[in-house]
Image (cartoon, rainbow, N blue to C red; front, side):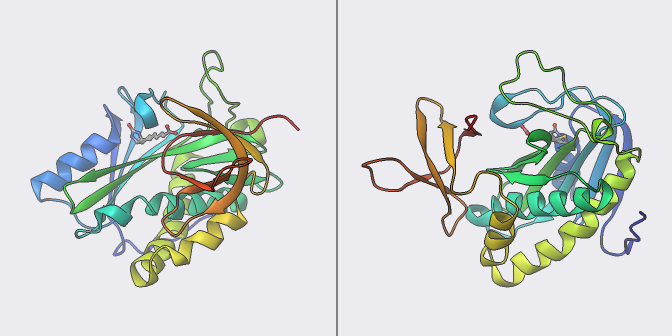
Amino acid sequence: MVFDLDPALFQHIALDEAGSTNDEARRLALSGAAADCLVVTAVSQTKGRGRRGRVWISPPGNLHLSLLIRIDGQLAQAAQLGFAASVAVVDALTQLVPGVDFRCKWPNDVLADGRKCAGMLLEAIDSCWLVLGLGVDVVAAPPPDGLVYPVTSLAELGFAGSADQVMRAFVAAFLPRLAEWRRVGFVALRQPWLDRARGLGAQVVVRLDNETLCGTFLGLDADGALLLDQPGQPIRPVHAGDVFFPPV
Ligand code: BTN
């Protein structure tokens, strides 16, 4: 499947190697040389990073992408774009890899048949830009040792295409979501994300920095916080943490 993207809608800088594409995007933004929706990709990263200080293993063949988005002071709302990106990744991968159940996992992961295949790292630059970093395990998943969740790659699921194909499908799915968010806000993303979510209405374990919570995943609040129903307690909005799905 080929996605024809209007080159006027986004610029693409393709690097062979980067420390982190998020850092490259930041550098371009601070130099004044970047335009809205600039896409930076690297074939491999030597210092790829994930959320919560984790390393993101970044071998050639996987997708390492950072998208620079103008947020013009909307710093508090910018994290909502992680939901737009998750929905876009699910839709792009569903078209590219038929027969696989792709789902959004709160806050910013994508699962393929229950295993993580993509993750996002959002970083703001002042209150002007958001760097949306996306890693998709196209050809190789990280080694499972030390990981607390199951992982897979698109290749393991039968995809024989390239990281570039995934990039194009993602950008084509993401840009209309970004436009909708700019027009009407999170209300445009909340239901599409919930429609693609893993574990809605089910028991989840949420690991915070200093606490582990168990309860029912009820949905998202108006800003994207996970709503957790714990027996005998008021419904708790969770703003940051790692979600696990206990075996049923
Ligand atoms: C996570 O799941 O923890 C987020 C992973 C984000 C990885 C991507 S790869 C492109 C961009 N550059 C980085 O250093 N990280 C993000």
